[in-house]
Length: 227
Ligand SMILES: Nc1ncnc2c1ncn2[C@@H]1O[C@H](COP(=O)(O)OP(=O)(O)OP(=O)(O)O)[C@@H](O)[C@H]1O
Ligand SMILES: [Mg+2]
Image 1: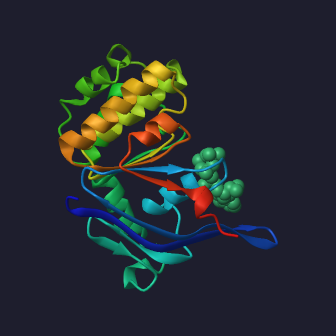
Image 2 (image 1 turned 180 degrees about the vertical axis):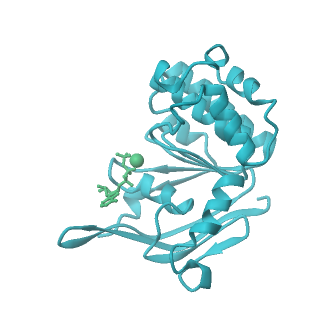
């Protein structure tokens, strides 16, 4: 394994559902190095998206320690009383590329300008953005706005945004979920090529057994689900 990029110990998360606290995740341990990939699997509602949200600071755990690129987050850290939100925001801007289940594009910007904005926020080269759209098969749609393209094309634009920021860690929630088999395979090829070219770590939530089989590690939340 290359340099350790992700280390998680004893992670737990409950949600309030009105009168009771519903446990979603407990006792999650992970270790991932540069160039390694992990598939997070489990039925709908098992906590895959919740785990990805915890790993980029969009949710705050009830217990456990998360280390990403040498930045450690836990309740004992003096900056983390309110979730360590500023440290997390800096990591999300520069080091962690997140692809959500629903593509998160700015509606008032073209696909190309969305990618350029993401690259600029991460301090990266804006000239390669068109090339990323080309590689993902949507180069001819660069000047269109998000509401003028299909869901799968928006998802590929969201991946181009992540690739253009050259992150150390990619968190992708069902990145091929809205794509047909052929396009899903092409997008997955790009994800895995980027991982080997750049040495970034990749964590994917997926129901797709073929995609999961391509990953170095698999975490099945059905086997860690709290009682
Ligand atoms: N903010 C919230 N408040 C209360 N419950 C929540 C909240 N977010 C998620 N949950 C619950 O936590 C559980 C895990 O949700 P999560 O979205 O992580 O599942 P998932 O594995 O990603 O499912 P899917 O495959 O459908 O995307 C679900 O039962 C969900 O209803
Ligand atoms: Mg989900």
